[in-house]
Image 1 (cartoon, one colour):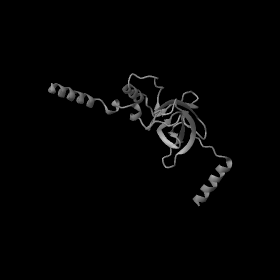
Image 2: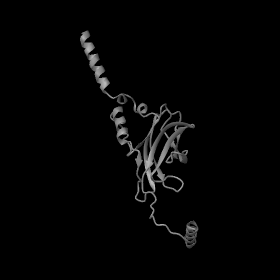
Image 3: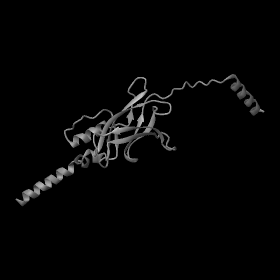
Image 4: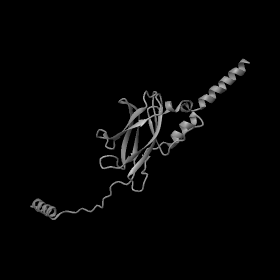
Length: 190
């Protein structure tokens, strides 16, 4: 009887060792402190926590494409996971342009987000970002942070895609500019 119990224990240990570590934990622990940008909204129910984790991983994206032909808006579906239960129902989502690595992040905008109750460890939501001259632009990298009481509780990086400005390559000078260039060339040749 002791051998049988030992064998069952060894087999169970081997089976548990074969299951990936993140599949044995809660999604809130696997993704804690992260905002996952999703290619589509997640279902409202999952078969298991493993299914929940795999759906989040399968739908994770880094590049967000415009939702319309005019390329003026991007819809961001996201799932935010907190390391600790949120002691509030409101959190502030903030966006920063981090395209230029040599410069500090440039604040773009913020908005309030709400959970269904206190003590939540995750938040699923969507937000529409609009293209503006001083705000969101295509082919720029953004930092998205969720804050509660001025403490960062989750974050993500993503790139907004789309057509950037197009240039013809043609340069047009005024008559005065052209004359100024000719005068400068004549002086340089002397």
